[in-house]
Image (cartoon, rainbow, N blue to C red; front, side, top):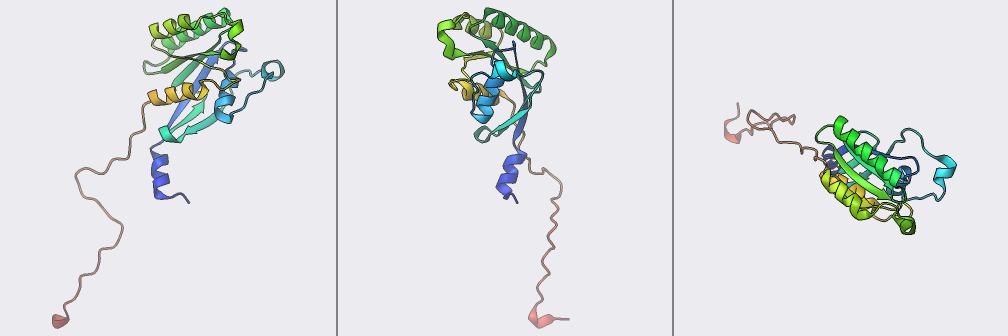
Length: 191
């Protein structure tokens, strides 16, 4: 059974739905697996590319956030730094989310495969400028080396609205289920 403090912490935890979007092969699943399971599979794309949606969860206790990774309260748009086509498609995803998403949707742009610097096709400064123009958080990541993966998800978590803490009753009468103590009888005057 959970202790009262644990119960209180869980009741105040924010659950946020998060979606990762990007071109096939940009590394979306690799980022999620690195973040949630701290794993990386070198040849995942060639062996078992993901299609559609996968669902994983991860809790960040120190920020009191539980991510349900697939929904739409927040989005991480992922592109492959070795592909300008991937970056252009990421821009299209941003436009679509800006058009369809709510005004409070939190978005981040992740340039993945930062470990492939020698094959870079998208300049980091160009991506940073695009992110700034569109109000996106930007980081370059590497699912392979884990570079900036936790930082990316933590930044999204920090930007999410927090769950309201339970409020004590205001005004009125507080009812208590404990019985009231019986009045003490005076020894001299019992009836």
